[in-house]
Image 1: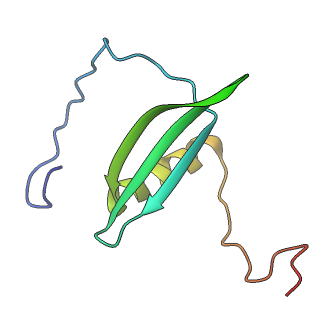
Image 2: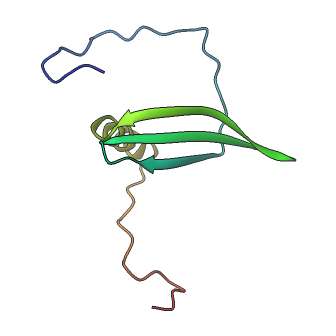
Length: 88
């Protein structure tokens, strides 16, 4: 992970040996040190199979989420404190 002072490479080197994985779900956990744990899973008839685990810092995850939202033209809103169907 480059520091803010380091220049991010202008060229992306593609590793064509990596498989493309289909995933159905992602489980996320935020840590106190600013890192996030992501676990991607695939549902198959008799079980759920974990495909990959990632650790990513807050800033990088925000950029990824922003990019995904732009690509699918979906901009979620923060949920209200009382959800529909809540007894509060």
